Amino acid sequence: MESLKEIHRVLKPHGAFGMIWNIEDYNAPKSHKAASSWEQKMHDFVWSLDDDQPRYRHEKWRKIFDEQLESGPLSIMTSSTPLFALPLGFHEERWEVWLPEDKIWERLNTLSQISVLKGKDKEDAIRIFKDAIKADDVKSNEKGEFAIHGATYSSWTTKIPE
Image (cartoon, rainbow, N blue to C red):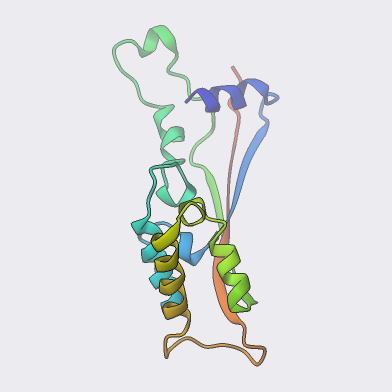
């Protein structure tokens, strides 16, 4: 809530606040169904490495906006006025990009929960990825590249002036 209050403080009256995330299927919220079997296997693997760090895929970011409306016996003494307009605006734009296997692994390895793996754990991660990408139902193009699916998510709201 402190971050939301600070954003509210620095925005001009009626100022807009927007958030944008580019999320691959393998790093999406738990309920998300990936577009391909290899991405679903990696999605399940990434979730098995959950490190309790707040991420888009945990979907907790929305709750902070709802919490601004919570009231209790003492809220009249602090503030029960919401900081931002609800409901939040939301848009999802699906995309697909084709990359060779080594570039996909490089991309996966930018996820902190994979990049911190060492020794046998890292070897297991590489094996899981290679097995997933080599599955019989995985398609590649004429260049030997594989499709990565994802979406750009955007959400926005406006400041409610004091």
